[in-house]
Each structure stands twice: as structure tokens, then as C-alpha cells.
Length: 328
Length: 125
Image (tube, rainbow over all chains, first blue to last red; front, top):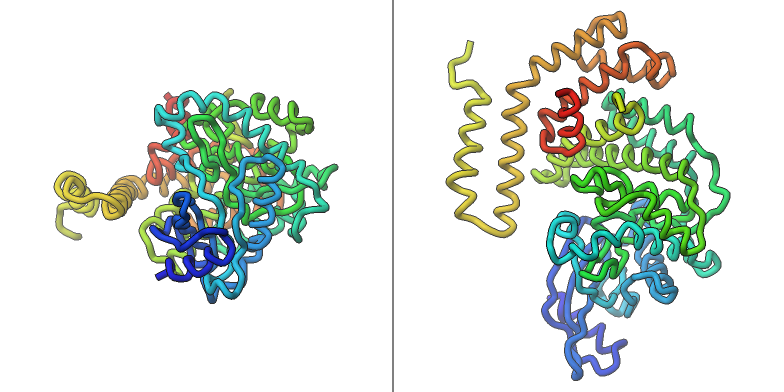
């Protein structure tokens, strides 16, 4: 049934298109859905992706940039040569599809464990840490004057938000307390330079092909802040998927990522990267705690949600490895 | 006193049945959900087996560290407050060892295959 709305939409803005077929939902939370479909065209089908908040879910959660901003950022990234899908259409009320946008479908893999283990990606893997540095440098270099309205974040604000989220769980966690103290004591202050920050740049949110990074996805947590945040988040141990000696997404070393970043003309501050890695580890731990709460209080009573709640201890051991390493 | 088999023997028996007899029969999303369910039962089995001993040891360490008594939850609340206030930190004798042991005991139940845990376990020799 979504194909009827998609068909009416594509014929309005895609010259030559006659309809839409093969629509299938790829993922869907309560507020964001992703669908794949093909635009029917006399020159052959055009692969497309719909990303939308269904009708009735107009209000974005406080941290999300919103679909219009997300589309604008992806388009700016695409135009600047940062691997990103081309945005084809931003939804309007006549589309009757909710709020969101339609973009070009890029073939490749996003499942982190496959990227780290399958032969198909063996040649690409050793290149990815450096490529991640290059891509992040491009992303951080997007001109501020062209960016949509985004929230401003600093380390100090972020610590306060995490502390509030953690305290609301009413769940005494000595390791989290230790991490919060460490973060406050090591808060590097406002970044000397404020840039666009992707906010969720990690293994799992990248489309990878045998040739390397093809697209950066999930821009909904984009904001303005310290560019080193993205370099720290991509190193959080949870995104290494078992390859714990390769900090950058399980692909390679920090030095390779830093070299790629600096070759593209930007400066790395390693102490800030380390700070944001600790922050990111705590962030994922608190998010796991939130999953436990949502499981218990509803509406999502799934087994998967429950089991993510039992992954908090993974972030506790990773925080201890960062803050109180044993006999090195 | 309840009769036997014990709870962990019962949950293990259900988990073995699902893994050996049901898993081969299904595929796709249902197979994924079944794997999650089996992992969940295995976690419960480990907790039923290990929790009593690790909680008792944790309480003993917390009493010595804090000089006060209470349940494992109450003592964790006191420790959390003292760390938040800066009264206890990594320079406090015994704190790092306590947090490490407690966290290792949690991982032994939650995620014994987590790579960081296996690395630290090999360090313990």
C-alpha cells in the first residue's frame, strides 16, 4: 500500500518515472523507518531508499536533527565529495508519506561483523582506518554557513546530560560514577574550533564495498561541536565487534586514522580524542540502561531489548580498561 | 526446601532442547529470535549458578572498603555516593581491585564471550 503513495510521489519529481515497485521495510523504530523500493523508469529501474517519520510522529526526539536537516546534510556531503547518497526528494505534504526524504540506494554492506569477517571485504579492511580519517576530515570541513539549524554541544553540556540520564535510571553503578568524575576532571573545555559533528559515525553506520567506504549513513544525531568527538566515538570498543586491538572500528590503528585526517589538511588533538572515547563508552552504557528501562516499562517488551540491557557490563569493563588498566 | 532438579538444571534442559531439536527446524527472523531466546536462557542459567557466590564476595569486599553494612544494593548505593562526592577514588586502597573483581563477575554471567573480558581473564591466568 505504501507503493501507491510512492508511485504518486515519484511521477511528480522524477522525470520519466511511471511508478514505484518492490517496496520493503528495512528497519523501523517508533519514530524513524527505512524502506527500499525501485522507481519504474523507461531506462531501467532506479534503486531508492525512503527514510521517514510516519504520520503522527512529527515531533523529533530532542537530540535528533530532524529529517529535513538530515537530508540537507547528506546533500551537502554529497556535493562536497564526502561519500553519501544523493538526496532525490524531500517529502512534502502532498506526498502523504509523513516527513522525511528519498535518496539514491547505494549497494554494499552495513553489518559490522560481515565487514570484519567476510572475504569480500578483505582487500578493503586494511584501508578503512585511514579512509575513515579522510572522510571525517571532509565532513568536518563542510562550510558552517551552508549548514541547517543544529544544536550546539560542548563536553560540559554532554556530561551534564549523561549524568541526568544516568541518575534518572536510579541504578547505583560505581564504575559509571568513576567515569563521570573522570570526565568532569578531564573536561577539555570548549573546542578551539566548532565544526559539524556527525554524532554517530561508526562501524555499522557506513556502507562498505570491496573498494572501501561508499556512504556515511544516519545523520540524525548531527550537531555543532568538537570535531574530535567523531574520532573518539568511532574508537569506542563496542564498535570494534571483537577486534579489540584495532581501535578504529575493528579496522586499524588510531595512527592510521589520524594520518588520513591530517593528510586532508586538518589537525588532530589526541588527548581530546581519548576524552571522547571515554565519553562515548559511558554514552553507550547509559543507552543500554535506557533499553532496560524501555523493556521494563514498555512499550517494547522484546527479548532483544532486554538482552541489550544486559550489555551494560561490557561498557563497565571497557571503562575500567581505559581508566584503571591493570598491570600493563 | 524445594525438590530437585535445581532451577539452573531446568533452564539448561530447556535451552539444550531449543538448541538441539528446534533451532535446526526454523530459519530467517524466527531463527534469529530463537537464538536470542537461547542466549537469554543461558544467561539465566549462569546467573542462577554464580550469583550467590559473587554477591557474597562483593558484600564482603564492600563492607571492608566502606566500613558499613547492608545489602549488596545498599552498599553499592553508598559506594556510588562516595565516588560521586570524591570521598573515594582510584587512589583509595582496594577500590580498583574491587571494581575489577565485581565487573569480571558480572561479565562471567552477562557476556563471557566478550573480547575485553576474555583478554582480562587470560591476564588472571
